[in-house]
Image (cartoon, rainbow, N blue to C red; front, side, top):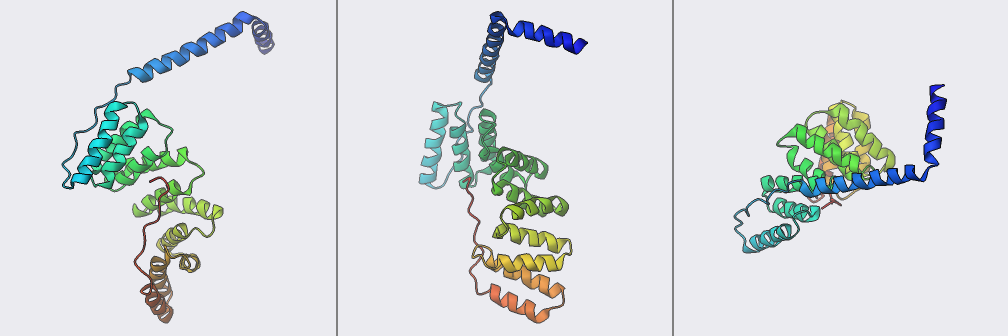
Length: 250
């Protein structure tokens, strides 16, 4: 009975022009309040420029910092300064600039993602949190999920890394970096035949071939296949050193 009364009351008001005028007014006021809050939110000063030995690096940092001073509420300006700092090994300053960029634009995946990559070795819990945030912001991209799985594996959290990798491989069965990392997880969980199968596929990609053959040698040796393990190790030495996996966010 109460539900019927409320429904009737709502229908009555919805038919009145003043009701919709009030709704529009509340939406406008909400938007204005949000904009005023954003404009009043304090923006930190960019860090002082670090001392760069290379004059070209110093020039790049100075020009990038100048862009922040011109557009202090530009997420991109703060993020690009963070990238320039990080690329030149000024990681502490890079993190503070990525934090400011994320605050200005919480929907941009790169800013928590870059923080996560820097912090996983220094502040593991915070680094994992930032990588998880990046995964939430870009649910279709494999990159943040793979980096999160790498960080979990490095911290010995194999049971958390495994489902992430299985999901990636369900989407792209031949994703070589994911195959290689999944094989490492398999080895850590003593699932040797499964690891061997994944590594056989990972050896076909030049980006992962050397590392895959090296790991395959360990897997075969653990299974007692000494001759095959020796051949795999010799095969690994015929490939160049492992190459960095391209990062689409950089």
